[in-house]
Image (cartoon, rainbow, N blue to C red; front, side, top):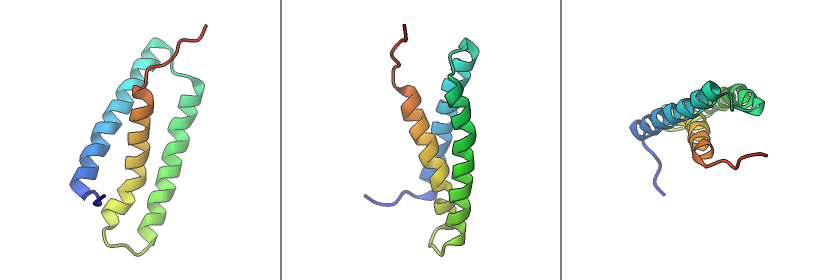
Amino acid sequence: MPRKTSPLIWTELAAASWETMAWRLGMMALGTLPAAEYQRMVTEKLLAAQQSALALMLPMQDLGTAALAPWHRAAAANARRLRRPRRRRR
């Protein structure tokens, strides 16, 4: 699989971020966002920032793409996870 280019990563990151925000805001408005999701919002950003900083310290060809990769992975995973239908709890 070829490596993704920086413009493609930026585009996918923007789309996944907007989708994730829309799902989370919708659940917040309905009062159905679990407490674990609030915690996830904080921890995923801390982890992505840490991984991004580490990527900038390592010698690589494309620093911009390497620094964006953790943010892209988290946003894409969130969008996929939140997109799945949920089973109702009784």
